[in-house]
Amino acid sequence: MTDLSIRKKKKIPITASSEGVKIAENALKRLGFDSKINFAKSQLLARSTVTKFFQCQPIQPDSFKKICQELKLDWTKIAELSEEKPSQTPGITDCINPDINEGVEKMLTPTFYRQVTVIDKKTNTIKAEIKLIGDINSFGDSSRVEFILREFAGDTIKIIDIKEGSIRLTVEGSQEDIDRLVSLIKSGELKEVSGFPVEDVQILSESSEEDESNELNNKWCLVPEIVTQGIRHRDLSEVDLSDADLREVDLSGADLSGADLSGADLSDADLSDADLSDADLSGADLSGADLSNTYLSDADLSGANLSGADLSHAHLSGANLSGANLSGADLRWAYLMSTNLSGADLRIAHLRSANLSGADLRSADLSDADFRSANLRSANLRSADLRSADLRSADLRGADLRGADLSKTKVEEARFSSKLGVSESMKQDLIKKGAIFEDSPGDRSEVLTKV
Picture 1 (cartoon, rainbow, N blue to C red):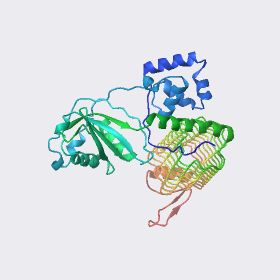
Picture 2 (cartoon, rainbow, N blue to C red):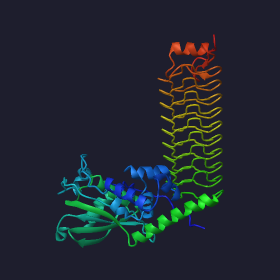
Picture 3 (tube, rainbow, N blue to C red):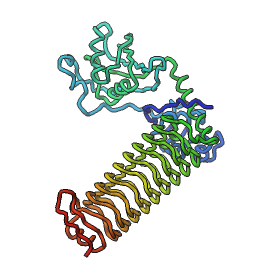
Picture 4 (tube, one colour):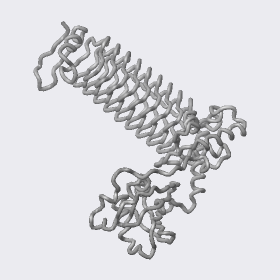
């Protein structure tokens, strides 16, 4: 059985150059692939990922390398490796304590950075080399420089070696702190250290190519195993399955908590009763998927396609569904407390008896959606499109309805409160259509019913 210790970690996307795409397209023809879709299918890669690759859009590094590997290409010759312009924002060294900022000046010369992220498995740290412009004989006490790096990147940063060629510092630290250090340099915020201009930064490893190859092979050996055998009730917590083609796969009851499924194709997959809490499903295709009784609390579903998906009784409290496509989705009796649904497409969605208390539905398209008996207390419905929605017997007390469109909405026995976007004319119109207005606790106990 495939090793499942393929855990997710921070990844920096890679983009193909326009020249690299031409080389890749020629390779497709040379290897006999009659279309990009068939190539994606043969490699169990999400079609959207392959499309992005050939459209010069950034994709996950392991997906980029797999595409190049299967096309018999050197990924470093296909990737876009361009020089970055220096940041126009104030340099990070401007914020350094005056006692350690003496002699530090900003350098405006643009520099080129490249990196290969690898973890030292023995010490659970990452090593990086920073190249500074200057004379090594004038470098002086390294503890001062180490202090500055720790101030901005983290307490785990430690200088372990100094070499000539101008000045080459080998530092190590946790993945988070090294990533932060590289980001500061790459963004142009950290241009100098103790008066020495930064020329280059590179993350190192004693066996980077071998480790990366093993991780790449492990992930893409696991995917066909899942496709052919399914993973019902298996523990895949925090596993990386990003960009994988997992259409119609049986994942019911599996533990995928904290897993990286971003960009994955899970259309028509069976995820019923699975644990996807805190999982990354951003940009994933879940159209037609069975997510009934699934735990998705605090999951990232931003930009995901959930059209026609079954999410009945699903637990989505605290999840991020901003901009997601949920048109026609079944969300009956779903738990959506404090869920971010801003800008989501919920047209014709079924939300009968769903709990949306405190949910963020700003600018969401809720037209023709079924909210009968739903709990929308204190929900944010600002500028939401509720045209022709069915709100009968729904609870909207405390909901923010400023700018919301309630034309042709069914509101018999729906409960509202007289504030947050409900004008007097709107109130009277809703009452005529059968709505019930109750004052919030602490206000007058008057209850207005339909005239």
